[in-house]
Amino acid sequence: KWSAALCHCRQGAIIISVHITETQAGTVSLVWTSYPAEKQTLYAVKMFRKSLLNIGLRVNRPQHEVLQRATVNYGDTMRRRDASSTTVMGDNVKLKTMDDLGGPSFLTTLNWLFVKGYFQTTQQMQIEHRKIYGPLWKSKYGPLVVVNVASAELIEQVLRQEGRHPVRTEMPHWRKYRELRNQAQGPLTEIGAKWQRIRSILNPRMLKPKHVSSYANTINEVVTDFTERVAWLRDTSGRGVMVNDLTAELYKFAFEGICSVLFERRMGCLNEMVPEETQKFIFSVGEMFRLSPIIVLFPQSMWPYLPFWKQFVEAWDYLFKIAEELVQKKMEEIQEKVHLQQDVEGAYLTHLLLSEKMTVTEILGSITELLLAGVDTTSNTISWSLYLLAKDPEIQEQLYQEVISVCPGDKVPASDDIARMPYLKAVIRETLRLYPVVPGNARLTVENEIVVGDHLFPKKTLFHLCHYTVSYDENIFPDPHAFLPQRWLRGTEEKSKHPFGSVPFGFGIRACLGRRVAELEMYLLLSRLIKHYEVRPDPAGTTVKPITRTLLCPAKPINLQFLDRRVQQDEQRATAGVSL
Ligand code: HEM
Image (cartoon, rainbow, N blue to C red; front, side):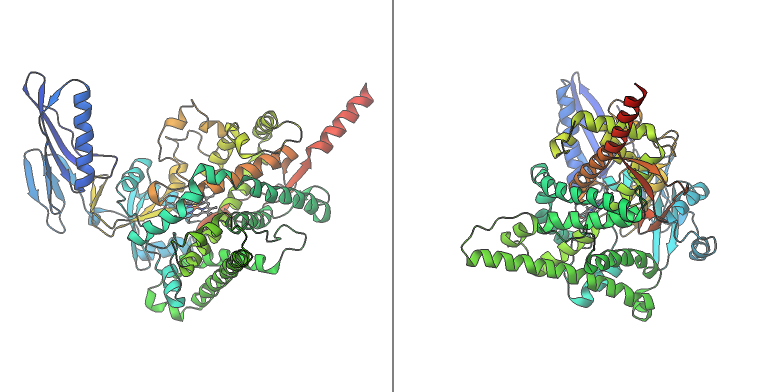
């Protein structure tokens, strides 16, 4: 007889016990108890039975008991759980409740945020709180009660139990804006079956490799413009070598990039004179992210009276306005072509409009969210990767050698070439470990109660997943503060350590919709920049730390030197000629 207590099966159900008894030689009977998630557990039973059959055993029809909500069974012990007390599971396994969790009160949190000064560095506050309270603690953030999870194992448990329609958070402030203006929710804000429908429409052309690689040429045109802009910036304002406030420049790159993918339209963001609209769009994205954590500190009833609620609404108004103009222009282009009886072909938005699976209002809701998600994310990551490479010439040289070995001479890296650049991917992966754009993600349990660690949490528990803290866990990533891209190369021990040690794009069916496009943008840009330029730190020696503005971004401008490699090589050749 064998029994496995409390293991979490992959599909999110909890197997409380498994009993296998040999009834006669070579024949076994299987008895399972699980809690609750019937469908997923039945699947697990089926797979387990199959594996027993595969090793040559005969298995009687499994008996499977699904426990009801308030009852937990373990072995011979069956006890009823009352609302507040600890659940007893067997003789020595105890499930605790939310009430048993430690953590700071709202006043203490306010003290940390505004007196100790962690409001802009909440990523660091995660680390400090983990030291005090351990990997699981409860905190109050305004009207919200949040369960913080700060170990890879526990994060895995939460994510694996996220259910059929995972909810990140209810995002009441973002949803409120849409209600106020009668706008549709998009993939970031929608929930339940409606969210699933949106994802099923948006996913294919954002995530399928054949569609994503079709955007490479367009993105490469944007990359070309960016490298030219770098040259122009060095010459006009950087004394021939410096690029100041690189992140601000990369916001323009990212906006131009995502617009070229979605609308097949160049916005002129990388021209010498950047259009005012672009500047304002980028500013509005930043404002909206900056104000979001302030607003949720207050109860909803107070929002209309808050001065920054007005600013928040204005920022959203502008984001929707620009998105609407772009959608409108695309519709006019399509109508014009139909009128002229020309073939209507096109990429993302054209496809959405032609497929007629969504109304124009729904498309607008989704496009606005894709646009805003596409600006700060890739740009901050590339900024950090260049910052790290500038500080580490050896790693930069290794990357440069990889790029020129795959793309020698004037060859421009294309999407096929990227597949042969593992070090490039490792550089981005390591950058996202050290500077995860989303330093803390979330999940709201909607379908079931769930067990995490030795605690049972009711439905509607909001979990804050402290990815930043886990990224620096030395048990998973030895020497966690060092920039070591080789951690992510095949065959290294750390790569296989814990799959939830660093999950920069999230997990499961609710994971990042723009992941593939973002990666393509980052690989194409970084490989080309490093091929063209050697990056060196700011001679002023400025250290830049991260802050959290919903997303993780640099606390102050990143200024770097960009040295043209061709000029350097010419100079080296000339010097070698002289000495000969
Ligand atoms: C470095 C680049 C990026 C990173 C690190 C990143 C990271 C993330 C993360 C962590 C999530 C939450 C996933 C989860 O809850 O499991 C997310 C969601 C999302 N991302 Fe990204 N992202 C990036 C770029 C982009 C880009 C370029 C776009 C748009 C084209 C985009 C669109 C979205 C959308 C729409 C969602 C919401 C998905 C949903 O809730 O169904 N992201 N991203």
